[in-house]
Length: 294
Image (cartoon, rainbow, N blue to C red; front, side, top):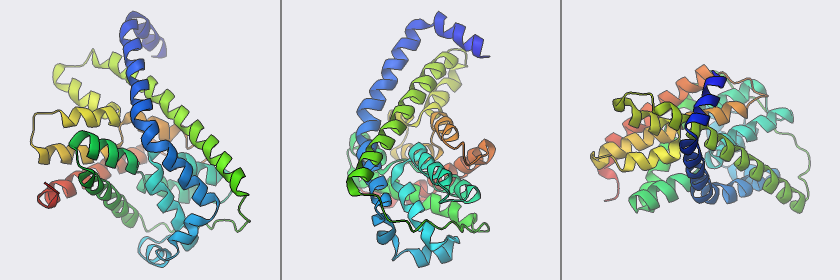
């Protein structure tokens, strides 16, 4: 199979080159601006115990409703802002450090997988639909659908307790946060080029009726732009966009699975959870569309 892909990449060299450039453009113009700074700040806040302090008022409610130890509530809040692959890498690192149990990490990754607020609010809301308020609505819907999954999976208690070791010096934490965020974004860019190049090759052999669907689900940032250009009603566009943001795209799935080596995450379960979250997000968006800002 890999040999066949390799031969196709040689035969369709121009297509491979063009899609690689397109992937780099998406990475540099869309993903890096909407992800890097937030990733650094969230990781810095977590390492300095600021995030734990900020989530203390919510800890009793989250602990009771979602069956999460109070010390682990900050994991959920960190994942709300880090985005799909970065949050998976973050939780996987916590497992390696012994701060989070593998079984708890699995539940968190399966339930709390979100697109970054920067991408949803800035790219989808402001750039695609010229409304940051609409982007905020879309992001809140992503959170709501994820919390529903977290609630439905509460039969497994998250008992992980963060270590009480003193925080590292601020500048050391800042340096580590920048380096870790940069490495994660570098990996995201690599997987993005890989998926978009191979996806563009495979789409050549699909029936025309399936080509648009495949192009949308292979990578969610370019898929979001394709959905916004579809000749359908705004209500249906936003429902499909919400579904895609929750599903993540197969490129995101590849990134998450490659970053969860310490968790032994099951792709079958991850795929099912993304489908369920996509259905929830699309349904919520379609029902509450009349209340969206005009």
